[in-house]
Image 1: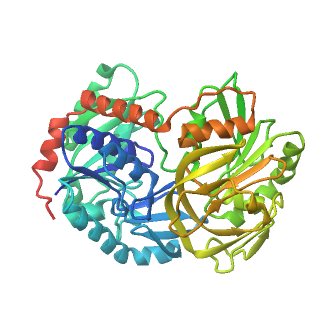
Image 2 (image 1 turned 90 degrees about the vertical axis):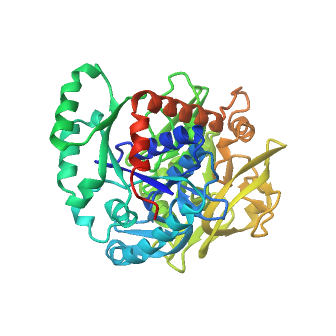
Image 3 (image 1 turned 90 degrees about the horizontal axis):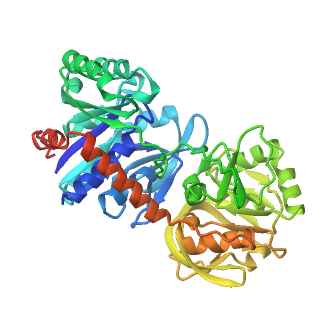
Length: 494
């Protein structure tokens, strides 16, 4: 198996997007290609066919490569639950919570897991396109590194470095990154890609010539700034949409540990829906629907909600006829209490919920990870839907006797999920990805505002359009044949 690694000068340089684009380029050329990220730190995750958990970006890259997402595509996933600690997920399964210092000491064990995944993938694919994390020039993290050059050295693969010119200082970023690498690491850097360029390319040419002369490394392409590019985000929340004449207005609470905010991409991209991400110190504006999203630290984020005064604002919103939807951790917050006796997510043992619905939740060490199909029970209609579950909590109480949906089947034996309040003002579900289904979205929007006639978009179709757009851009602006020669000419068959 050939391996090619994309590293970046900074976070958000374009590594995830470039790997996804190249996955599609080579898949369309008939290659059996797979994405790989040795170590990912993100709160957006996806469920694999094995019932494991990987970074959302790797699931997107798998779609680009036209393969089913699997645990080995992201062997180490870190999901932060505080400023200094994270849940550590190895081969799709959570093993423990670790503080940063403890994880640093764990890295050799983590590297073994990374190399085991690499070895298994070598038996299935011809080409592995690898995404680094952050920057290889973070010299304080170089010891026992598994995310960037530590991995590249271990498997002896070539590296391409991408930099974002839109941020400014692109030549300093590239030259400085290269300078901070060891001699052997510098040697495995085979070229540069410059991302998000706007303007006259002729004005950049003298800089490109200087860069190639100074570093003795080729510039493999300059990718233009793609306006309105919208793909599943690895971590950062896209909050730049503003619709001036919206049919439906929605507020999403921007929790400190918000997870799987990609749930709302299909809504955010709709031209007739305005989503307002309500941030720290902001009040919930007048809207039709308030969404409380998932959280990686539900008890801590519930305390945050109360400190912001959003609990009383939600109550006022309901009194004035507004609707509230809780998703996963957001649903748990709507109940009477949340208990975490084993310290799964935080040091808090029990927190009083918003008490808007009659149920209680207890977190356990056994996380539910599964893809499901179900029937949604809204508006006196039975609507087929599908999605995935990622949660450590089990909820019980009278409110759940009027479920949000019933499962067609469930590996844990669950019959139903969530609730709809007796007054039809509140709903909650553990299911992520609901809005990816146009039929389900249509029913939810009808529940929110019966008189609104909105045709939902298909996020799957939209995603495909964006991936094809990316692949076309790369074919036009990258030296694909040179990139092929880089991985074909390198002895990286380990």
